[in-house]
Length: 342
Image (cartoon, rainbow, N blue to C red; front, side, top):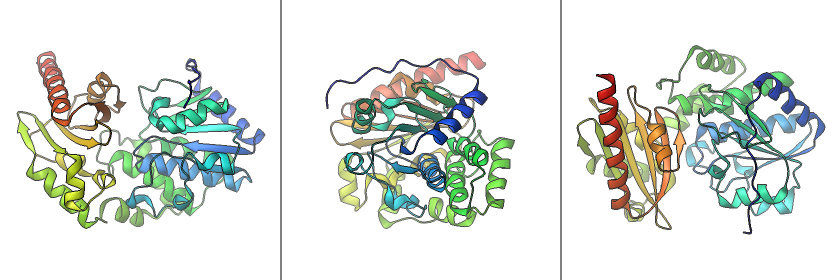
């Protein structure tokens, strides 16, 4: 795909001023490309689709470009059917500006989309809520709120553009990244923003139904496999999904989104880990923590990142070898944390 251009990280600047700059950029330009990370979940997709609706309401052209497809549980969102793959961009739009949403670093968008961004030479607006964000954009609106959807809500309020479809997309983001308001990032602002979105017409019941109560037979079979092959050692529970399991169980890799949350419900554990074997000799590792343990630091050790209680990474290697490496590092850090906290 050619050599990448290096974007020097822009140092943090006062976030109120950055928001005003982004508002001006939207006013001054007409064509926008929006993207988010690989394996998109509710906050990534909800934020991207809501921003696209806002831009369209302003009379702008906007496309959401993603390397991965939309998970079944999020296809109900307005505009989900219009999301395009990387090859579609050249045929439909020459963006003046890129919005990269819910990504701690640019590499999270995937090689194909990153190549498009680099090749275009267009400015990047980085909107994100991860505490380890690399400030890779020309404009970086990064705040440690519960969900990126809350930052898009600020743009919607600034333009006074919010309707039930926008509200539903943003509510989906808040629900997804707080895990239904169960995670430690559920602070008063998250609850106030959620209430405001419902008042604006967000279809809260529809969001819950699609995110949590609509399971395929394949997903139920995957859940059974994960539980049957779960391992418990002291305060860690982990399970694995080899690539062959998907064909054997009549399921797809997209149907694994909520399995790590199920593992985290096990009584007495501190950390849950799910290993998912991908094509090309890679393994996706998802972490969840219950207590005061920062799994994002473990993920970062392997080139990933995320939040203190919810993080992930993708590691090259065979499944068994990756399991051994990750669990060894996790045990080491848990032991150190136990000694530190007494």
